[in-house]
Image 1 (cartoon, helix red, strand yellow):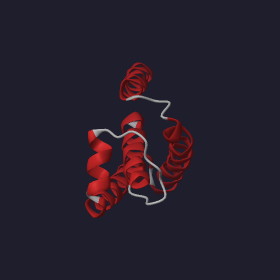
Image 2 (cartoon, one colour):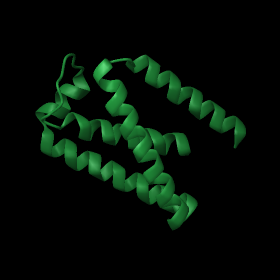
Image 3 (cartoon, rainbow, N blue to C red):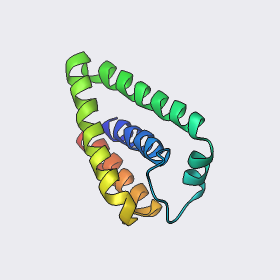
Image 4 (cartoon, one colour):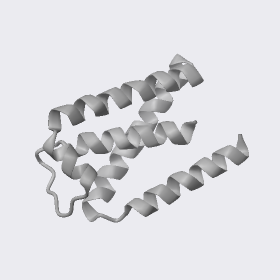
Length: 110
């Protein structure tokens, strides 16, 4: 569950990051192209995903710990995206493999 919530937060922040006018774009994929051409809808979807993940985290962990965990995830993923995305260091297959490994380890442990 934590891996899924973390991935939702990462996806939502990635969408919000790509709607910014200050970001310089070198390469595009179909997702980023759609996000950049539909800025208003992308912001609404991203804020909705963030709100849903905050609510799910609060349901799972409680209001205090859930909110704290959500904001820690958000701060971590925001700094990681701001650092790694301009370098284009991670490809889609890398991200999918990291999430898959996270889900596998989470399934084994819990």
